[in-house]
Image 1: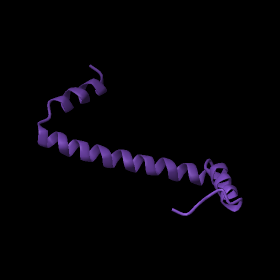
Image 2 (image 1 turned 45 degrees about the horizontal axis):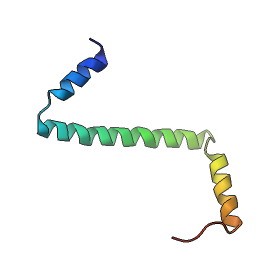
Image 3 (image 1 turned 90 degrees about the vertical axis):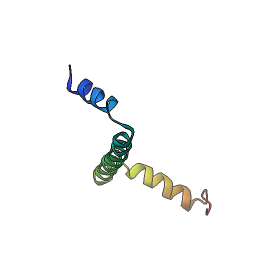
Image 4 (image 1 turned 45 degrees about the vertical axis):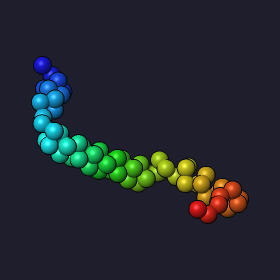
Length: 66
């Protein structure tokens, strides 16, 4: 059995309360990882082209206030 299969089996065995706690933990874990990826991409300049396009669109009047 692989490590992932063991984790899946353990999750399936959780009671409803434990499953709810796991879901909350998983959501926080995923959000933190996503934030770290975005921050790393920004620091590496991988989002610069998107920012430049958005600023150009704004300067050209192709944006609107919310």
